Image (cartoon, rainbow, N blue to C red; front, side, top):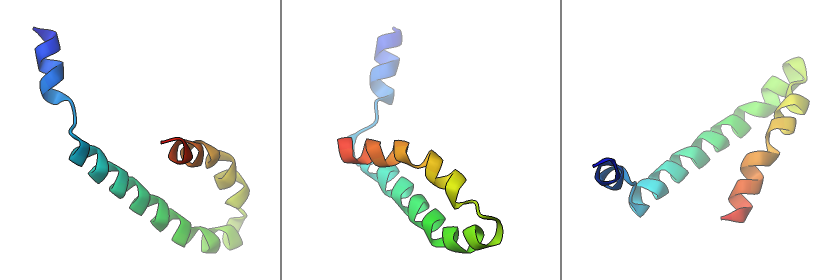
Length: 61
């Protein structure tokens, strides 16, 4: 019973592509706002410390 429910919820390739596009758009928006925030309070160092994970994941797939 549960495996049928899981199968029905499995995302299609189109869903994955849309999610990925939204994620990349969000990343671009963050990067666009990053320099101004960095000049204000020097938050780039903290931001860069958190960024390798998404970048590594993108190069992997």
